Image 1 (cartoon, rainbow, N blue to C red):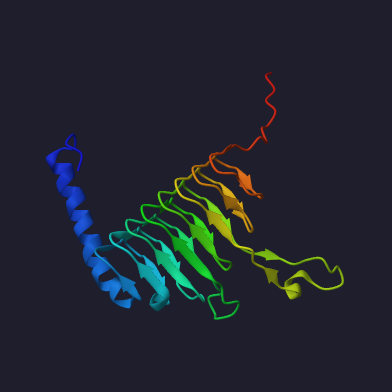
Image 2: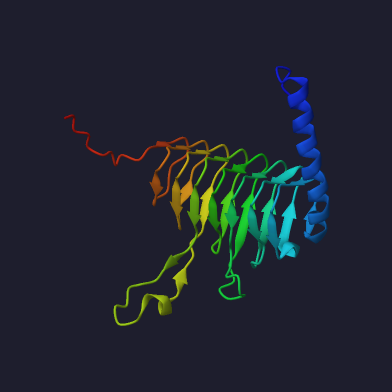
Length: 213
């Protein structure tokens, strides 16, 4: 813990952490596997936990919603953080449209209020940082036949890969079929529809015109 933090603040941090460890100690009983400590914030909702595997010191923060129902499961590496209000959803809540799932490497994190639609396979490498309100959609609706309603045409799932050591800024949207190469930086608010080569810096160029009165 940082030496510049005062005694009172350290006590508060330790108290809150202890509560999360105790809460996680109960919730881990319903997971497929959990190594080391498992920390759970307030009002964390975990369903179909037998499909969820966690490494050491994984943290699900307040109001996170993790649905484990999928064919390949959800796998969280050591020291992964799922922040406040994040929703991870591979499948329909009612058992239809079974998705594939998610793998996250060690020391990676998804920022507050993110959405991970892992009906197609999503693979996130090690040391990947997602800012707040990022969205990943590993599925696209088919719509080529104008004589049939879109909902009836089904979906295709190419999957999403984010390689090691990437920084994904706040409000980034990543669509199905995209691979983001190792060590890349994606600027806040960017819509990613194509592969990003390793070591790239990508920013959204849609700037609004500013007129001075």
